[in-house]
Length: 410
Image 1 (cartoon, rainbow, N blue to C red):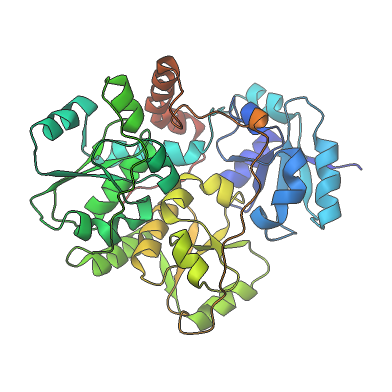
Image 2 (cartoon, helix red, strand yellow):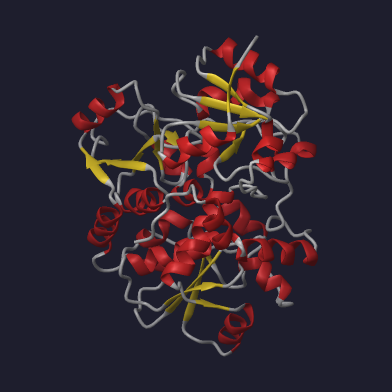
């Protein structure tokens, strides 16, 4: 089939104007991670039948596909056409044309969320402590609590000794339980940088009275500092909001431009078929399984911010979040809005009939096709960890050169 083409300059213009578009890299993830445009999402050609209808909910949304000379575009176009997608274009000249136009190439995965995290730290000067400083505080039995904001399975694999698992969007909801004394210093950590920066700044934005710092460079930084990690821990933070947390979270969302809708207003939004709408339930998986609003996909808030290119590859789409307690949705929405999405939070709806059951989970790709992140597991080399940090430290400058992001920081 003959595809219409779109030039790199036209793609860039659409990004600058915030028009809806899914820019899709058709290579395997390992190849995608070697370099791609900032807002390109990975959808390997062999996974289109598995992923497209979940990740691309509007079938007439503009989709631009490319490869790097592998000849994947025609096959991808056939897959999309078979599924009913109607607006497919090929990036004229592929990734090589993007390079030749002088536009920025970003490596790794979840690149624009990571770049946004670096921008937040740069703009807000999010406080942090080194691994050596935190280890010293632990050794001296200082009044600190370490909150690990990664997924529970990541925490179980390895964690900072004594830390408690409080996945990202749960922080404002649970910090008052884990650190009830405002004199306690809260140290937020992830595996590297992004989630700890966003987590620490979430607590600061929400007005927690405690001193809050990020553990600089996370478990990777801890390893590079020759500190010992704990394994197979199972400490979970319970629900306990600090004073004023609910109102503060709402205020943070308001300042970011998040809009709140009642169920009737949500129905009007859902009826608009001219725009892509993503609907996410940002609660923990056990809450979702116990009862969730129909049509909402499960995606815990902290991971949603980190993996927004995977969850919502249509740049310029609308996002609707739900959470029976409100706090998690408001804090998650505040970050997505700052990443230039049009974000809404639905209020209520949990008194009606709910769907019960576990979330739909996409099959994992073949391990040989997957990019091995230097911050996961326990086997990454020290050189790989350091190279990763060197890249992250340069992301703010790379954002400036790219110029398409539209991010702001409240």
